[in-house]
Amino acid sequence: MTHPTAVDRVHAAYRRLRDIDRPEIWISLRDMDDALAEAASIDARVAAGEDLPLAGTVAGIKDNIDVEGFDTTAAAPSFRYRPDNDATAVRRLREAGSVIIGKTNLDQFATGLVGSRSPYGAVRNAWHPERISGGSSSGSAVAVALGIVDIALGTDTAGSGRVPAALNGIIGVKLTRGRIPTTGVVPACRTLDCVTVFARELGTARQAAELLAGPDGIDPLARTAEEAAQHAAGAALSARPRVGIPTADQLDGLAPGWADAFHAAARRLADTGVEVVEVDVSPLLKAAEMLYNGAFVAERYAAVGAHIDGHRELIGTDLDPSVAAIILGGAEKTAVELFLDRERLDRLGAVARTALSGCDALLTPTTTWHPTLEALAADPIGGNSRMGRYTNFANLLDFASTAIPAGTVDGLPFGVMITAAAFRDLAVHQLAERLLAPAIEILVVGAHLTDQPLNHQLVAAGGSFARTVQTSADYALFALDTTPPKPGLLRVATGGAAVTGEVWSLPAAGFGSFVASLPAPMTIGRVSLDDGQAVPGFLCEPVATEGAENISRYGGWLAWQRARALS
Image 1 (tube, rainbow, N blue to C red):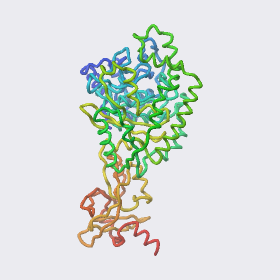
Image 2 (cartoon, helix red, strand yellow; image 1 turned 90 degrees about the horizontal axis):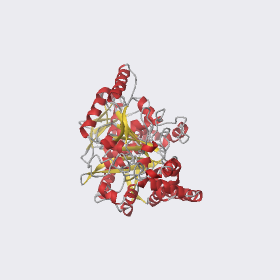
Image 3 (cartoon, rainbow, N blue to C red; image 1 turned 90 degrees about the vertical axis):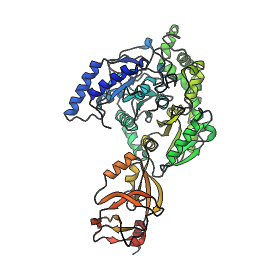
């Protein structure tokens, strides 16, 4: 994306801050003059030729992530401390050129999916202020949705980097657990926590997340570069993608109209060439229930339980009662219960992976409902538990997941989530691209056909096979005089024939990059099919066919190759 100057963007951010007057988003804000000084330095570095991919953006950071120069509170004033260094993710964000303007509000100790469990105030929804924002990364999501910042960092243990994205109509990227180090993050559940990225545009969110990824030599749970490289070959979407969706009964309990909106999103995905199939996700839903209802909650006590236990007199003022009850309850769990739950989770994970076998990813709603602040206050624990039905299992079972907008229902944002196995972050992104942008079809007739030498270029661009077709009888196919021979398709006035090819579906970004890399004499133009449709397709410059063999009589490139092999 093209960014404004850093100075202009900082000025715009503070104007927006004043105009919308939503103080509950922030726990602390940076002095504008200080932010402008950093922005001026960034502009100077860019002018000198330095590559700063996020220059011209501003960012907010969830206040359970350390930022040098700011206190870290985790939304508990009694827990406040001043870190000596940036968290690894924050340092990398700064190094890429983004200017941080403040620390955002959250559900206290990142315990909640609602955004209202904070002594700094409930964060109101960006679209409808009487509704919840979602949490726990509430302030980060709303700051992005309202256009104050371009990027915000959150964390995700149960869905905190995805639920608020869905409820505010933005993108929430949760890479594979451990790809972004959690050094400098106040733990919620240390072995499950992920740093996440919010943005209004998928490309920005994905770019920022990847810039933050990679081991830092400090976080012992960070995934190594060797692990990432080992899985790189299977990271992209397959050529004939298959995506699972829950069965009808596993979508029960959604807010009115949400099931219809979900199925509409699934149909849009199918229209891009993805095979959408129902799968039994009950093992995933059972695993999701274990995050709070099982012994795993003991890890929350291990993280901050001693602080709450030592400040019980502050429960109800400084310390949120719902958060305190959940975390203190973790102290009652035994090691035996934990090991039994670990075994049960392992078995549920094995069953789930079998159910999803053959699928590139899973498509689900991100959450189940969008209550008002008043409705949530009437049932804070039960209301929160409904939020994580489709998100809670992801970190327990080591899945990558991204939340994306999928329209509105009754004037409120509706979001879906694409979830895939660990290290399949690229496949998740490519599927999200398909849902967010109309797919573009392209006809191929030669080396880009299935199983041909250049087919991998289409797959790398996010393409998937759509159908086998024939052109109208107005084309000639030539074996160009190249090494190895390449086909050249040309529309002719007389003597034409129908030529067999394949239509592939590509996301807009992938189509653009693919076309930009085409060597001469290949071109892209409209090709008429025998069913009356016309699609973009491979053609060649007429001059390239001079002296080339006309192979139209074979009906296609593969038929000519077979005949040539037999001769």
